[in-house]
Image (cartoon, rainbow, N blue to C red; front, top):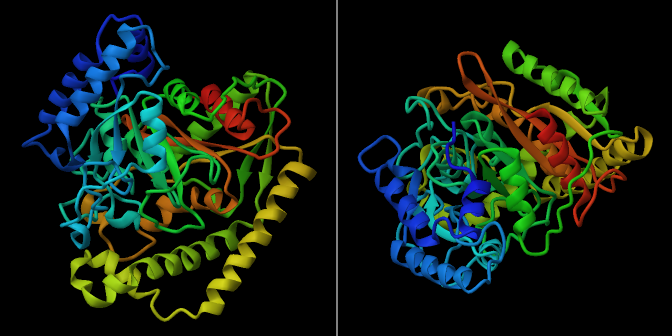
Length: 448
């Protein structure tokens, strides 16, 4: 599991027990250590000189007593669909192989720099974020951090794996249907998808503007909570679990055949109860319709983004990505519009019942009903083999636009999986500027 702890690094930097330059150099050395290994392509781009220059500026500020907060001087990695000035954004695709360096930072990178964070690398991703395995990329599949024959999950594959390998203490990903939480689950780290719009998507290559979220990855819940609260504009206040009302999701979509994962969810529910929460079984009858709307809306929006490239140079895409895009080509606009309107109705109906009728503050389920698989299996063209099981317990919460956190658990000979905690909006139990996130973080800490 991960060996780099964000809160310890932050404490050492604040107390000047180490320097940002020493920390960043050690991180760059760790990245060098991946060269010639199965994990080499977890890194999509680097700018060592820029990172060291930023570290020197951080050291000057901290020495002058201007410590900003827990990300000041900390090395972070950023998924390769998020613009970082001075580095290309290639999105794991030959389509963008010749992309020039970005001239501006994405909005979330700007916020991280304002918090003092230092970007040391761009990370591997499933091509254009269009898949949950991390096995599809112009420069080859990403290897699982603990077993290179397996997949790390996607599409934020490199960010999750670098955190899990202890190379960086914190990384950015994006989550359109599962892309932060699934790799977090399979790699054994924490992945947080905040509410829709809580973190800016400006400067992020669009997967689906209806579903895209920026998300956070770190070794454990305390580190994710620390990073979340350090982002400018986020006022995170700890929320007590006692008195919260939590729904455990039941129904066919939420069934778990893997006995170890099911037992982990059971244990998580017991931990919530022991912490003073009330846990009840609930259903989400909108699930099937949410799952049906997801591929129509995301597929239509992805095709609109890629149409020009795909129709002029389809061979530049990896075969599985090309097949997914080709399947969207002839969809009628009326079908897309109907699904988009239906999604709005589903969201309103589901959240009104969960909050208004049932009085719930949070939900709990598994992140995925399966653990990691071989790269060969992940490349199957049958969606039921990899795509569906890695998406189906996560994507409904993108449609509902509510925060969700994957908390790692070890099951079956140490192979990681995740318990997923979901915060509900307008919750009375939450605190700070984003109360649903505060509730989700509190519950995630309880089950970790």
